[in-house]
Image (cartoon, rainbow, N blue to C red; front, side, top):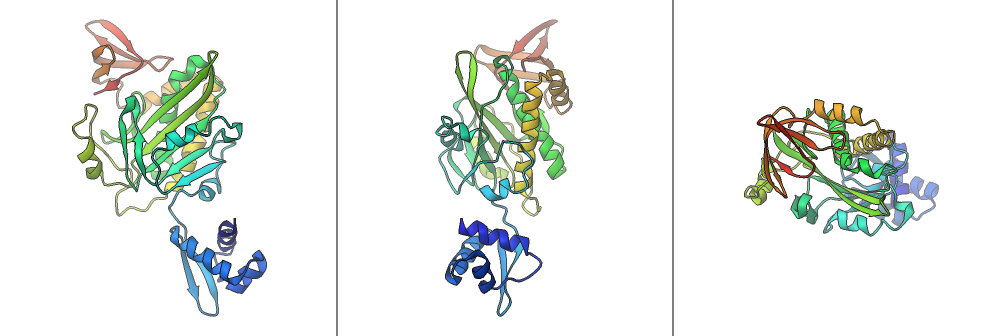
Length: 323
């Protein structure tokens, strides 16, 4: 891809100007092609200075989550090594499903700047405006099917850790798979699972992060829904933070969590999740398919179930919404 070759050369010589003729000679493309690629690179959010008789110089990187930016410097073995990017898509989750039959797509990430029909848990719509990070990952985890209910716990913990490391924020975890900031929702996780003969055929992990959004715009659309408890943005309008670093960090932490699940390090995952929990120790009301369960949230069990105490009786909830 000519654009990526021109960009890579500019990156590797970012301390100097490169003439159009230099780029043409080294990359063996025409001067016109160089000029077209430079304009396209600029349109993708990169800042390139151009000076007469000196040439071009890359002075600022893009913040778009482009495939080559995700792959450049990533520390994972497999996750994120294949990447797809869309300016706008109906749903990254839906596109991910079309990739599941190809073994080469194991670990592929599908990212969109905007979703028009984003999916949330329990068939809810997920509002996905520009400024957020919206993506899905195709996975074929080699874990025992009995551990799959722990996957949302592990994935949300991986995201909380990566937010701490890259943004220096202190997120909390709301059972089963929400990431909160000051008690308001900052990110959520969705899992679509396909099984065959009591084994995991594939798993699509959907992630929505309110990275740099205006919370009020989302709140208008969802404040009257049953599970609404506020919207937070990880990065404020005037703050500078790189979403690429956050995604790369999350993919790395997620791969580590999957390794821990494969090695059955269940207690370690639960212990670390509990340390960041916004739920454990609080009085909660949980909406389940069988009705409302309420009481004090004591802990999560080895299968990810929330254990609630009320009137000296404990109840286990595997699926539900906490308020």
